[in-house]
Image (tube, rainbow, N blue to C red; front, side, top):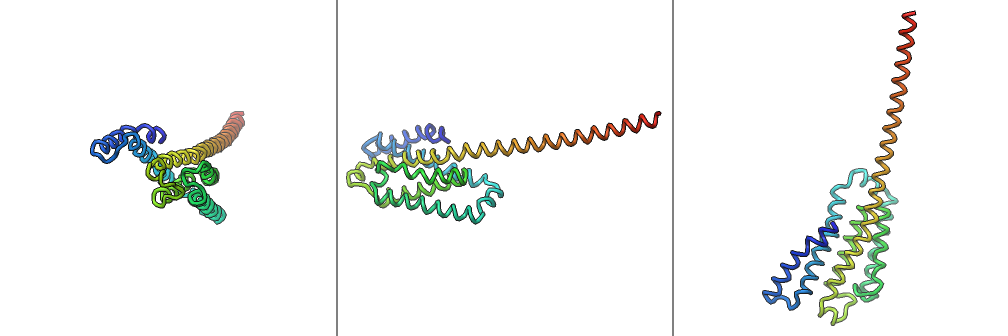
Length: 216
C-alpha cells in the first residue's frame, strides 16, 4: 500500500497537473501536482485498509468486538476522537496548527485495542472529519492560507502520516497474534501426535506380548 500510494500516483499526478496547466485551469504545475498526488495517495492509504479490513474480517472478529465492554470502549474512543478533532479545528489553527500530532493518539488506541479493523475505521473517520472541517468550513484558516491553497497539501500529508502511525502498530500486532495462534496450533498438533505415538507403542507392545505368549 505504501509503494502504491507513493509511486503509482506519480505519473497520474504529472498527467493531471500538465492537463490543468495546458488548458489554463491552473497557474502552478507544482501546486497542482502536489494536490493531485496527495489526493490519490491519501485515498489509497485511507480507503484500501478500510476495505481490506472489513472484507477479510471473520465472524469471530465481529463476535469479539460485539461484546458490551468492547462496544462501550469503541463509543468512548469515537467520542475522544471527535472531541480532539473538533478542538483542533476550531480552538486551534485548524490543520495548520503546530500541535496537530495529538490526533494520532486515538488512532494508536484504536490500533492497539481493536486491531487493524479498528485502526482503519478510526483513521477513515478522522480523515472525513478533518477534510470536511478544513475544505468546507475552512476552520482555523486565514484568508491568505485559503487563497494560497497550501493547506490542502498540509492536510493530505498530515492524514497520510496519521494513517501510517495508526495502521503500522495494528498490522504488527495482528501478525504477532497470527503467529502465536499458529504456534499454539502446532503445539497442539505435536501433543496429539505424541499421544497417538504412545497409543501405537502400547498397542504394538501388547500385540508382541500376546504373540510371544501364544508361541511359548
